[in-house]
Image (tube, rainbow, N blue to C red; front, side, top):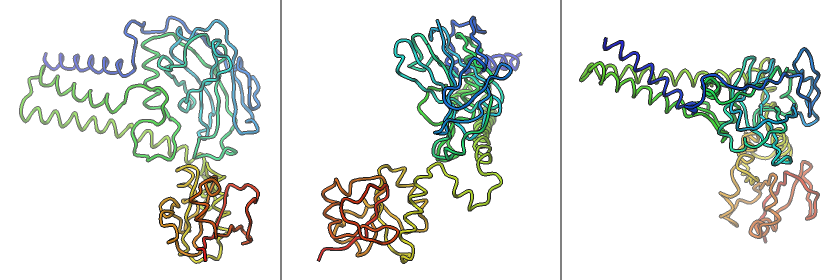
Amino acid sequence: MRRALFALALAAGVLVLLLWAARVDWHAPISPAAQRVFNGSEFAAVFGKGTAQSGRLHMDAAAEDFSSLQSVTLRNLAARDFSTLRYRFENFPRTLELSLVFRTSEAPDDVRTISLPWPGDGVASFDLSHVEAWQGDIIELGFAQFATGQLVPAELGFKPFDLVDMELWSPSWRGDLAALATDWFGAWPWSQRSVHALGREGDAPHARSAVLVIALGAGIAIGLAMLLLGLRGQRLLVVAGICIALAWIALDLRWQTGLAQRLLSTRALYAGLDWPQRSRIVGDGEILQAADELKTILQGEPAKTRILLEARSGYEWLRLVWHSLPLNVTGLQLAATFGASLPENCVIVFYDDDTWTTNPALRKLLAHSERITSVQSLHKSGFEASRLVVFRFHHGH
């Protein structure tokens, strides 16, 4: 009897925990009271080329900037009446990010976007109730696609796909739990972040952390074992150990799911290519070109030549250092404090950064230096604008 009561209490506790994690409105019905269904053929291709086929929209090509957008015009759709978005695509490439795009009658010139998980070939759900901008009357709703940032070159992201349909559901337990499942197990866009991270990136609204929920679930199981089964001492320690182990396995499986999604995305981009080809497929092609230019300018230089780099952002700095390997590159800010103590003939590089003209200290530091190009020619002030500016440092005499 105690075991049956324990099983029922544990099941009820887990259910309540999942409803809490999904941020369910306790007054909402189990199933949605109202639904709006839009077939893919009701959408128009705003950017890119698409044709309506058998109730769906087939996207054949992206726009000139390699992005695509499909939208539908709406009437009498109050955001507060619909809290769950459900959408379905087919053959959606893993090299694209997906975003929800909408406009309201209150701010028709303000286009709002929300990052969505990769849809796969099934139905994905998203909870709109915690999106601050989802309010008022919605007059246009659609989906935008673009190459995965920092990872996929824009020109390689798009492949033909079908927009099958979209649904909007009124608040319900089913909708919130479906959105929770997509939030936890969907393939969200990822950047160059450590693959061991649990959860997803970005500031978009999301369900409560799976780590927190699983930890609370383990705590509930241990507490019920004490209260209903009367476990104490060594027996309780054994049960606690089992609960912690199961929680750890659950978190590891979720991590493995995310890692597998990233692996499939990587395969979609690099499969069938050798290493030299893969090394040229990057999401920051402009920085790679700058690194190539820098290597051309400095070809024949001794391997120990010190190269001091300044860039507009930390990301650009890190990526240019990476692409410039095996050149001996470090940060200009770390070395500039030495001023006149910098080694003669070291190389100072500015990427997408104009501080060499606007910063008086740097202008003074470079007063006797020469600007060099791939032909090793000297350039005077007033040289045409370039994202990559290279100087050979000389001390004043």
